[in-house]
Length: 75
Image (cartoon, rainbow, N blue to C red; front, side):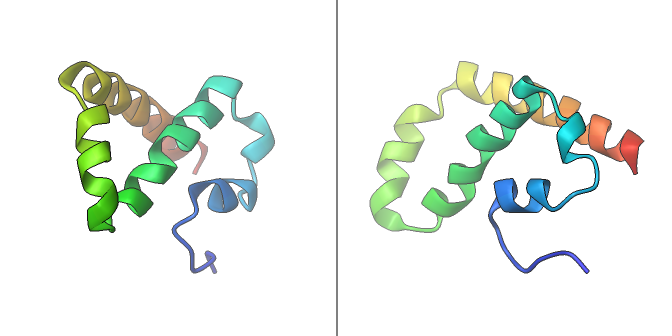
């Protein structure tokens, strides 16, 4: 049963193949985690929107898709 949390690092650490993640894949998890939390709070939204420019979002989406495909392959 997966843990009831939104903490991506905690979820990743509880996975069977966490030790197989590259440093770059762990960095992607670190980049994604605050987006979920900060988007929930109105005081953080303005700062978050300033950080999420087109270039950053494109990179983030590309890296997230690569991580997703890697995890899917492992499952």
